[in-house]
Amino acid sequence: MINNSEILFLYDAKLTNPNGDIDDENRPRMDYERSLNLVSDVRLKRYIRDYLQQLGNEIFVGKVDGETVNATERIKRLFEQKYEGKVNVNKLSKEEQNWMLDQFIDVRMFGATMPIKSEDKGSSMTFIGPIQFNWGYSLNKVTLVESASITSQFGSDGKNDGGNIGKDYRVYYSFLAFHGLISGHRAAHTRLKEDDVRLFDQAMVKAIPLNATRSKVGQYPRLYLRVEYHSPEFVAGDLRDFVRLEETEGLRSISEVALRADALVNKWLEINNEIVRIHYWQDSHLLLNYEGQKGLLADLLPSELADKLVPVL
Image (cartoon, helix red, strand yellow):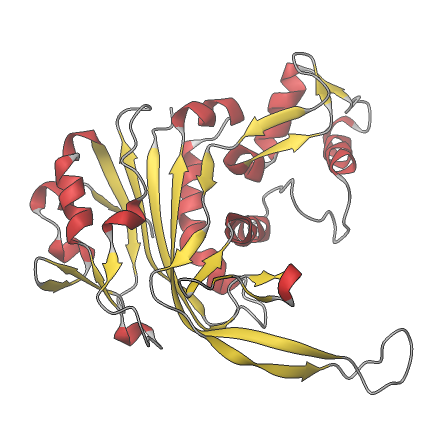
């Protein structure tokens, strides 16, 4: 059985575009009133899906053999591999439904709505994913690099017009924080496995730098924490509320970042009886500050918490 977990994921972005807004000329998503950089949960999940697919896993939300297909066609092609097209994908049995879940690792993690019927459902099958994130936001105030024009050497619509001109928007430096949850109850519904969760931990650390495109180079994970609880009923709350940067303005690199973790550690001490393990990974360039001491998490935690640390990699 999968236990409840809460996640804190911190990464930074330097001279890059963490998440462009297609409705705003692909500018980085921003809360302009607070000068905070925003990143959607969809963007983070895309990194994870791409990484899992690179490892050879079947992905529901993705291309098939380099081709974009609709949801029904995606499922049809999956069953053709096993049943040679003999399955009616418009109405799946419970056994076939379970087999399908065992193939699609991203559905086991994040859920999906599939436009097909099953024996015990209506016009579509909906799986609410056990792993969910809300939007990420920067812990520092972020300013945008003034847009630079970029050109393509290829003409538009077959014309030799000297190429296309676009805009390239980036942030100077953004230290981003995500909060997430793993629901033990929902994990049973999507057939999420312990091995899936361990692979998810690995993906959280490796996916972003390994899947960087031109506009995404310059993003690196700095801290990943997954706090696993005994009870499927317990949650502590958004872990971002318990950390803060010592300086929030004018940051330009990880060497200028120090993270205050006093409130987080004190919260963990308060709920220590609820915690099974703290799965973690920390980049050595990120310094944490707890009770006036700066260093790595494993060196700063009180012994009753340090004994629960489990490295992810």
